Length: 478
Image (cartoon, rainbow, N blue to C red; front, side, top):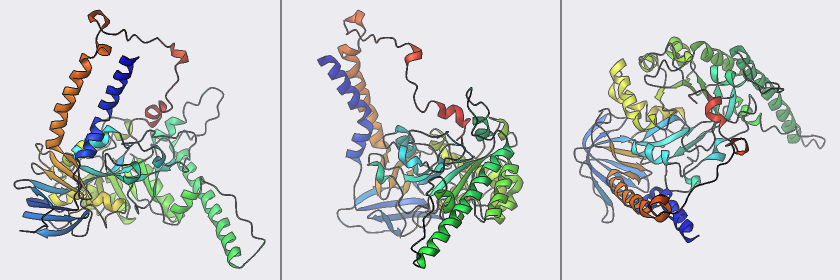
């Protein structure tokens, strides 16, 4: 029993090592002075040999030979580059569930209910310079769940991740993903999903018709209450329709998954019909075909830099998509939709400059200021400007270089990733691993270790993980 207890205790120590040790070592200074860097502002060009003064989480001064108080943290960035923190406009990092696939319309759900602040992918994203992300519901539904915008404050309580004041949003999905979910209902079960593209559009249209009528009934009720009508009876509350009414009122942003240009154009026309604006077309690999239509409506596009051929819908994808959209006046961002790709968004932005000749600063904006604008948080983050949050990445080289890596990632003026400390942590973890391997509980029985053979559980009795269907029903990209 003592051996088992020791084994469990050591496992807990290892699994919590990164988060606990990181929280203990995080710099918590009210004032930070970064000296002598090449600063890529993403708003006002590139500044050479420049200092940045951070006070209470905000950028307060930008210039040369700045002074700080005696207790300030001083960071020597000579020979290094500084960029704004990268903002990922499409992520599922730190979500313990992605798709609620019960109905075609699950607008009542919210990914905020399944945030996991201990997800190691958060730390890995920080190591790639990502500071902020738009956490989206999956694409199993024509109208999916509500999103949450977070800053990756790894080691903090989950409520501190949430970006207060960010406009609420919701996920829509077009194309193969939502229609494939409905194509194979269980035996005896009536499909609750459309199985064609035209069916998906009618699911969305029907939801807005119901929401419009629902809003009208509430408007009439409130008008009667305003006239002191004692006989006024409130309509029945609908958790499904409340978020859609917010879309009609311009209070909730629509982020629409899709690939084909005809589908996105259909959604834009539907938005015209009901008088709302689509905030972003997500993925949008064929958006270049309808760039003027997207630009005319002020809709943004949040895309992959150069992904194609991985599914039928991606057949017409080209590496010039971002450049064509940019030249037509569309607000473009580059997203990851992947814990892995999130670590290299700087290189995805570099591809836009390489393939399409987009100017360096405008390419950098596609992973910083532009997604901030798409998410409605550009007044506080997305660029290196006085008064904005100190979401800052210090690179060893220009971030568009294949040799670039973040040396330090700061959020609100606090260091959440420090490569020098990370290297030391790796050495400490290796020592911990060696200690665990020497314990009797981890040695093979033939060499004197404990017998750790576990009973075999028959497959038919094994409880299925409640999220097993997520990746299948999502159809790849979420």
